[in-house]
Length: 304
Image (cartoon, rainbow, N blue to C red; front, side, top):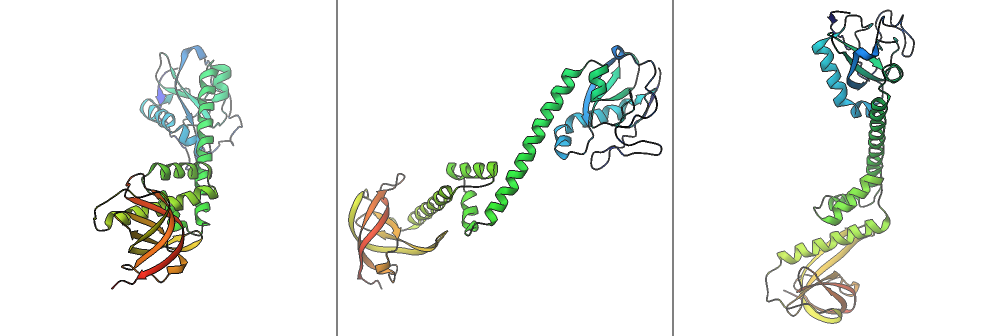
């Protein structure tokens, strides 16, 4: 067997080898086998996939490209029965998984289907190992794609999806963790969503606190505390339960962030108010506290 011929490589857009004139459908033997093929004279040059699965084409992308490049460079063997990638030069059947062989002493290449390669060329281990590896990779890709679109549908159904998406884009360990879980399984639990909104509110409070005028700071107390101070700011916060109004109060050298009590819902920035609330000092700024369950709230003096 001497000489080579150039491969046409008719691989369709969907990965399926296109049938030319006189060719039969996939899986049907085309004519006789190659004559005088001695498997001992051939060595593996590469593995490829030319089937219909997008995931498998991606898994075999590098190997398939290398095989195509080799055929374009060296051509098919003179006695190869077909010049396409996907037609077995040994038995004539069309296949999805294939092996590219080069002759040990003569120029040119042949393409052989996985089954033929395993049964007649003694390379079952390498062929099966690559196919199983690619199948696992393809399965993972399918699962990731399903989870991604499940996550998109999940977010689209959330009442406050704008605020939730805004928090998921934050560069913090907690937000990154929620992003990973959302796109890994396609959903978040109610507790995770509540925690996300709570973390977003705390971040907003800290941002407001940083923008407020600087004053002499003292450590904020903890526990149930009676507070009298000046309202620095009042702003609305959209949550999954609706709009909640928040306020920041400057007390005696420390600041408190909490929900605006209903008893003083007409308060404005600059008013002097008093109330009793449970305080929890911030871990990042000891002069800033988060307030909960305010009671006995009233406006002592209205601001200018």
